Length: 223
Image 1 (cartoon, rainbow, N blue to C red):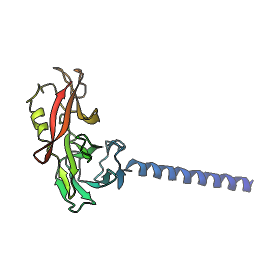
Image 2 (image 1 turned 120 degrees about the horizontal axis):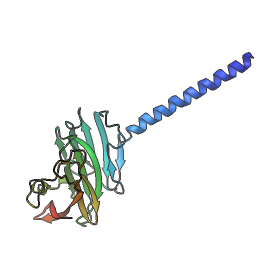
Image 3 (image 1 turned 90 degrees about the vertical axis):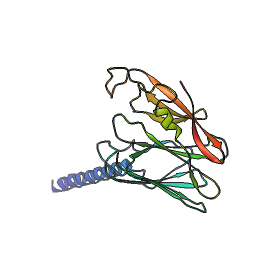
């Protein structure tokens, strides 16, 4: 009888140990972007594995196109008040670009949209607000250093230079398709709650062009 009780107790302790180990693995997987390298075949939503009710104060990961790296670091409290820096690695001049209180890293993409043999690094920044559009940072490089791609054309788009923007209230996302960077935005009809647009979607297409030894993003079309 005593042996049977001891045997059952041992089985119980083994089961508890396995449960604790599984729970620890789940916690590690939850934040598995720390020090992770994202290569050119990946597009990753950086916060999709994190519980949105929790705030991850620090995150660091590396974007690679198999030749050079951009190290992205995110620090700070709150979804809309984080500091983000971009730093190159492996180039003669490893510059750093810092942006304070801009938001959180949402999506990372790598593509050669202007087909010059050098890939661009696309990083979208969410602001955590209910009506704000995502910010976009684009970097490429030459033989010496990282280069920030001019994205000022997005301001012209959101200011209504090319089309009516009265039906846009944020909740957008970026992806790459058919040689374009595409910004998909939901459209709101009068009376729609911010959570529930009923006007369908619009795609805004951008392309990468070289102008006077500089590289910039240009608005192309909508559909």
